[in-house]
Length: 121
Image 1 (cartoon, rainbow, N blue to C red):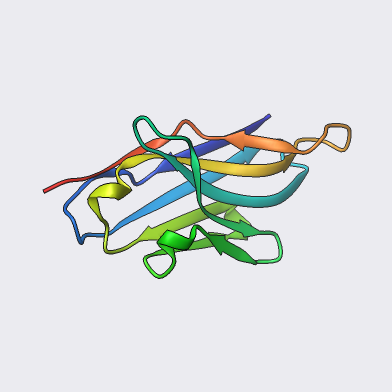
Image 2 (cartoon, rainbow, N blue to C red; image 1 turned 90 degrees about the vertical axis):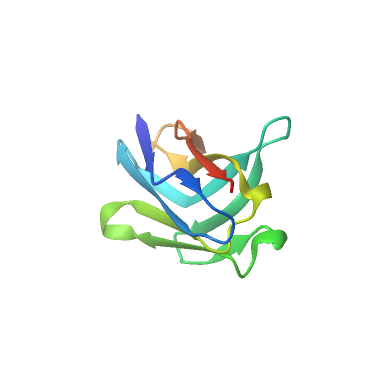
């Protein structure tokens, strides 16, 4: 199976920065993309940013310019640099991997446990 372990969440003041990390391990046969989603209380989970195998990235429109996704392919790790954080960025941030664990399994989403990001003064 695929395991995703997130780290780097916490409490930060408005205007501050945080860097999230997500390390993928286990049986990874094909990794099409890795990314971050977030879910605020009472809201649906939404895409934050995603990076594909080829290095292409896409972001939620509202986050462009403040958040940056990057990866270390050798470590199967993806990062999310979050700058100029706002109160509305408060949410649980989930790491996502889209791929498969073997040649015989269909591609699917894998999720981490989530890491809390709280922006508060």
